[in-house]
Image (cartoon, rainbow, N blue to C red; front, side, top):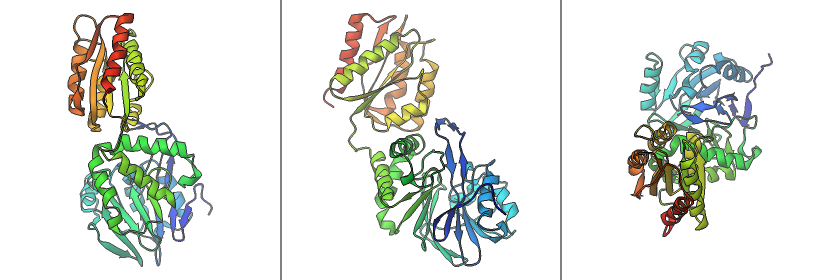
Amino acid sequence: MSQPFEALKITENIYWVGAIDWNLRNFHGYETRRGTTYNAFLVKSDTGYILIDTVKRGFEAELISRIQSVCSLSEIKAIISNHAEMDHSGSLTKVLKRVPADTPVYASAMGVKALAAHFDGLKATAVANGSTLTIDGRTFRFVEARMMHWPDSMWTYDEADHVLFSNDAFGMHLAGLERWYDDCDSAILAEESARYFANILMPYAPMVAKACAGFPSLGLDVRVLCPDHGPLWRGEGIAQIISKYAQWSDPSAPRKKAVVVFDSMWHSTERMAFAIAEGIQSTGYKCQLLSLECNQRSDVAYEMLDADVVLVGSPTLNSGMLPRIADMLCYISGLKFRFKTGAAFGSYGWAPLGQKAVSEQIKPLCANLLDSLSINYVPTMDDLARCRQFGRDIVSGL
Ligand code: FEO
């Protein structure tokens, strides 16, 4: 019977059977402006098929329809779960109800525990890091990918077709009908892969760096790289995305950019931000200005990915900072961004407590925290000239 959703054959023996989430705009606080995909894969074995990952709950009909465009669910011999987070495991129990009762589920040791904790004691079998397993004539190798994105994260390599299923790693939140990276707009891929890294993987950058450095020693002949979100990589795209990950996770990679992010009450802090940003730019240093009136916290994270200077502006509100600044700083602190230099700025009425509160928040993020710049009520032209000079001074010598 024809299916409303069909699989896409990606190699001789492997099919994409995932789901497209066109409407997703919030992934635990990360604004996903272009939706996403939950990629799952079907691998042909001697007498049936092996399913790698599932999709978010609510998308199981799409997953099952794509599987049924290739085979019957009764032909599923095993399920490999690379990561227990619900966007990849949310349909697992529904799929298990439709496949033969003795279908094994394989996961990393941490994945076995996580799946049991998510799904009322669900029983899975642990596969060891570096081990290989032949299921129904098909051989897979398993690589622990801890903290890319959770402790349970694992990669699965299909030895026959040279395909690496990398789960969250090397993915991006991008809905679309194109499955291959080289069918997509390269500027959109560059932006969305960087947004994804900044908002999902940045806290684990040291482990990503280690994984990238150790990639050649895995000895895998990867010809197709299949993340669980966004397009699939092939050809030179594989080395390109791995090299981007190596660059983004390297704290010593050259960065020459300031981010000036602010919120304002009566436009005084806003005027200060404009003057500071122009002062920075006048030195030749790249500067990105972001008002939280029209940018989300995840836009800020994206711009911080290649920045080494951060300036955060808030006026004083009730002895502290504005709520949108507090929200953004909570998010950025969790992502563990690190900067060479930083400072707070803003206007105040009777005490510069907003800038003091911001300084305390950004201190752990900055190797060198400079004195904040506070201006009483409304900046004069002379004050704005001071702001411009403040910006110039901050990047001089960097
Ligand atoms: Fe796409 Fe960590 O889940």
